Image (cartoon, rainbow, N blue to C red):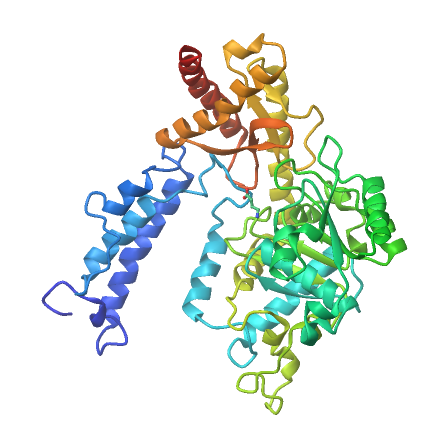
Length: 510
Ligand code: ABU
């Protein structure tokens, strides 16, 4: 151990670096453990908010600037502490802002192990265990979707947007394999369909793949946010009449804002009769497949040709963990393989079908599978089932509370299907105001102002957005197993408290 404050050069692989490395890790684990404990403590803040310019110039010695000379290990540990201090505790029971939340201790351990292994998912030779785990997990997920033993392929990819992109890529290749070599000029004008409430990644995929976002037909939804099958049917007929070639339909199982489930069987019937690829974006809703009580909402998913399912959302796996599941075996490989000889040599001494890297559009690929595999071992399928059920119970609790309160209004009156609950806080001045543009104009300002105050005070966090003709409303989502009904009650009281103060200011401004 050197008689000066150690530097990174004193860590392994330095000669006699073991003790310094051990000491550094022990200190780091203390920091991480303290952060994990704080994340679950209701008296801790969810966030310690600072504006970008404040963080950028440096706070209390925390500097983002990069030095020419090495900083010592003590300073690095302080930097690690500060990085967590000024971040957002997404595992906090009162973090309701995102579809992915929670801090699963086993998942976290899995992520640590993954980083320690620091390997790449492209070949079996460098990731033998992880490649086999991926095969086992993807098979399990396909079985849960309802595909038979002879069907099913897939890959973990960096998020639901990428999974959805794969679905469009595969559908196009399935119908027009020449696109791989000849490009879009060899193809007719392709059209794809998705609902008005679906995720923007479907349009983005069309843009990225050269199909064009204007060739995405946005199908109308009912007032609950579900695609209307008759609208889909007539949009397909119209596209064909215009000389275009429909090839793909995205149905959503769990829309981002309302948490709505499209009627999958009715959509599958239409896809079958027109010979179209059916993709189900179950990035958010896929977790409900784990629940005997709730999986009925995804009835018909087994008829999909591809499925997006993000365990980093409803199943609480650490980010990121998203799968694209594909019914037709071999399609991923045919569509994407380019057989780089430096990596995918065919004369290796093992079964090279386990070199799964050429199935993907990436080369290097992060190991996303291990944390989920370890969590599944730790909880069993039943553990995930109770976790999902509990999140939906929290949503129902919130819905029941909102119904009772005169200071809140639900965006739609029916019980939530998923864990999304959408609502407005109605300030006293608006409670007796008749519906109309003036009320809407004022109501639109309420949620952003409450959220700004909430972030500055840091005790909870929730998202808001406008949607269609609805002015800004709050969307509360539950995916964090740490959240209890007391946190739901706290959230409502907090919104009402902040809203009351803010609305006084709006009233005086007017
Ligand atoms: N990819 C959708 C995530 C959106 C959200 O967390 O609110």
